[in-house]
Image (tube, rainbow, N blue to C red; front, side):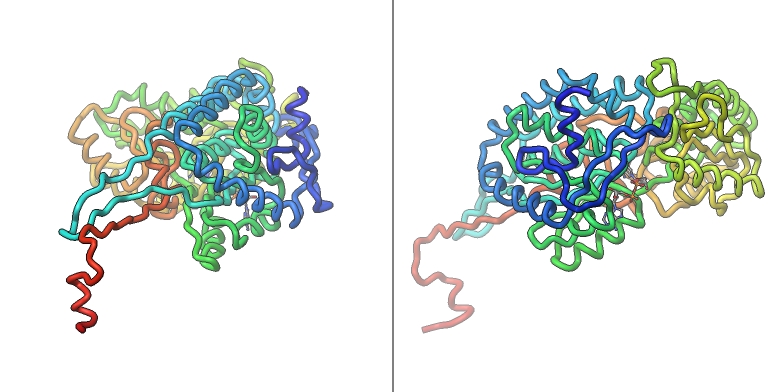
Length: 498
Ligand code: NAD
């Protein structure tokens, strides 16, 4: 481990320094590919939560008062430094989250660098309306201001990217932040904060606390000096965040679960749809909130689609995460793998299961699960309705376009979807009528820093990435100037007359 990685194992990053937690509790970070301990961190205790929030509060006036150019300059240096440390981030992310090294090198880390570079530019593009006279006697103008201290909680599936998505728009807009990553994958968030600090982000602007949701997370959610909560994770915990926010009327941004449909119309390029379904459902071993989970396929193509996907699923190479030839790594933990396996076992009772199962041999010590296609699952079955968050794709046929759109929308979630067709009118209809925060046409998964990411329905509200995220992390203030200079204004007559 390099010196920066060792610093990351201190457990907390508070006020510009690595700090050991004071709770007496520990977070054990395991490598999901072999069960080895990667690091044991002291969790944050109540005093650490207080110190982190206090550091963020103290840093707020200076950071929010910096010019956009100053914030942009430091973020530009941050992007460059993270690029220098790219391999270290790729290795650490791969080990703590069980991701194949090819994925962290080619997806997680470059995506994070691009995100920092994007927000370095976007920091200089915080817009408001021009000043104007909306009443004859006044000039009005709009100020867009940072909110204050952001309390943010992130999940384990993309620990580095989630840290970036939560931290960057918040600080680019002038806020300061306390982030609690998932307790099983905190290392790259800590390294991210250390690297930002090394690049010149002032002390207290980014603080990271390591610990369980029920203790550290809950304390952050209810802290009276936290102005806004930004949460990415399950819809169930999202409800807890909303309840906690009610106590001090905090602003909330929620990125929650998903159950994305992949709709294949009868005129689609079948080979493209099959490849898209495989990549779209197996990315990050299916532990992706936008992953394709429900293939809704026209009956005329359905048998060939099922056969094609099952064939490719069987060819996907599971292996050690450090091997660049490995396509798919393990699930994040044994407990999560067992939950996925149990859902597939139950599906055998009502659908056709192709593939699946726990591999043995050299992969036995890891939490691997083979790609699984569940065909002919009823629309109201568990595998179709609930988040599996694993390498499992459910498939079902449809007959009419109306039915396809209805099936796509038949979910409490609304995060992402894709439509596969060569007919422009069908594509337009699907993008208009499918209720989700993103609809791809003839692809599934690509994300870009310039475009917003966020859900509808029980997938939450608010946007990550893009300049739209500034709407979450800033408040609009109306400033009104009197133009008359009169001591007694005309409108005073409506209240009192002397
Ligand atoms: P989770 O909701 O169990 O945990 C997320 C975070 O919340 C963790 O840091 C956890 O410690 C914390 N937490 C748990 N209970 C808490 C409590 N009572 N108070 C405060 N914090 C608490 O989710 P997960 O299992 O880590 O991640 C998977 C989920 O995240 C899936 O539902 C997935 O769809 C969702 N997700 C959504 C997006 C998105 O952009 N919409 C992105 C990634 C993941």
